[in-house]
Image 1 (spheres, rainbow, N blue to C red):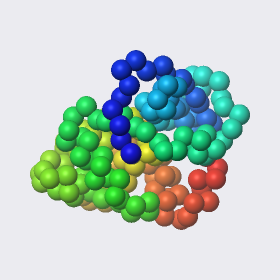
Image 2: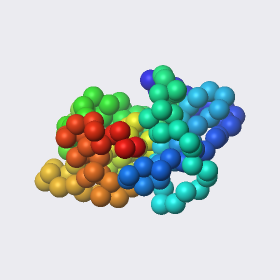
Image 3: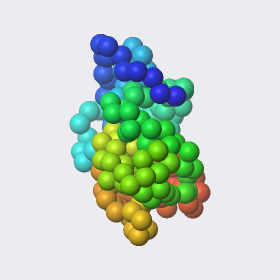
Length: 158
């Protein structure tokens, strides 16, 4: 479910240690809207004592702010239909978002995604099927795709 961002958010930062690196969650304590869910290179705040999965389970329903550009929001909405373990090309996602030939704009939307895992931009690949780039590193993208295709055992480690 997507909702508008709060006018005066009070952001709380949480950092979790995962086998893919540190995962930082920015959460508005008033509205429960997630402002960001990103991998970071180092621990910037105290690590939570609960697991990431336990933390996220307490947030249901998850609320994300809307993208500032309507096309990006359409891209994110279409991407939400790509199931775990599946991938889509930038060009195909552009077509589904109503703008055939806008693969580069889809790439920009993926690069600006601040909600890894929730907006699964790791499922978007170049037309040639290679991993391509990923805001949080190609190794993480490969690992996320592998976890999705081999089952959910890998998610228990997060």
